[in-house]
Image (cartoon, rainbow, N blue to C red; front, top):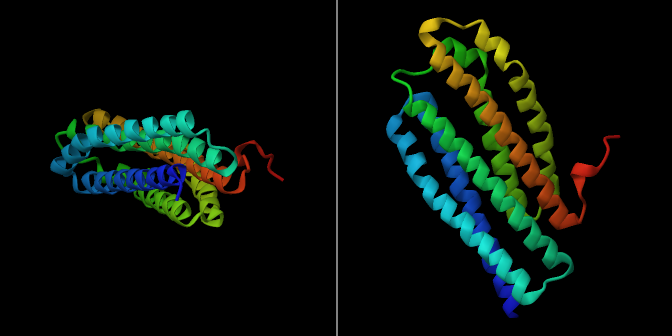
Length: 218
């Protein structure tokens, strides 16, 4: 094994660790949200420093590989994709942290009827499924699994579009802050779906050398 091959292997392991760490953040955020568990919310918040440190480490390793080994073709595509995916994962972790900050900022759980109306449970399920898809796609270099993410992202967009109307019909002054935070959570989960979609596109680019996001729908 050449030194470049070893560096690329180590980089793949690091990004997989990033995938796993961010996925854990998302799972804990879901539990903190529905159990209104502030201890778990604080745990997510504190873990963000480790996520940021791993992001910086992967960034440096990508830059060093490009500078020292001048990879070409498939190796170059892989390094560029890792660099981009790394940033998208860190942004998903930021979203999890943001939702947990909302939980910690409330004195009581989100209004149950409003939670049901905005369909946020479905959004969490879909986000988790998308994250699982991109992890499997990355591990197995499986573009068919990566493509499953696109349809799921459309589902999240659909729920997000109805968020404001569902919040308004639940509006009351007593729960105004909680409802505002809830709508923000809906927006954040929709954005997490977009980021997972971006990751899927980068995986397809790396594996197939296709830039899907610039292809017109037929």
